[in-house]
Length: 116
Image (cartoon, rainbow, N blue to C red):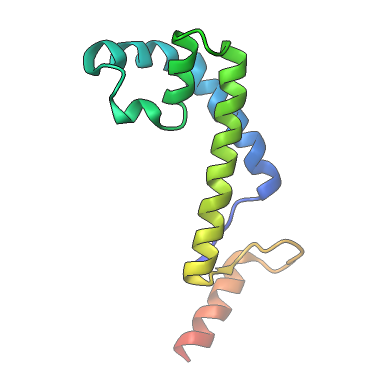
């Protein structure tokens, strides 16, 4: 399996930016609406992001604490996903760190190797 990976160093920054955007675009208000509509036992409200937003509404965390916790939990989840994927599929990373080869050229070489 060929994979075009994401730079792990950039991943943390992208997760932080995405978390800030989610909160900035109204995640807490959306969570409030879900709580009103489905109640506090709705399983969706225990997922990454919603759980922390719910904790803001319940005054357990400040918005900045909730954002930091969401960011940390998302980073942990991303790491688990990468580990699982690596173990399941043994991918060939086309943009491996330290590789100077063009990802497209590397993909063509790997396809030729498999197909003959």
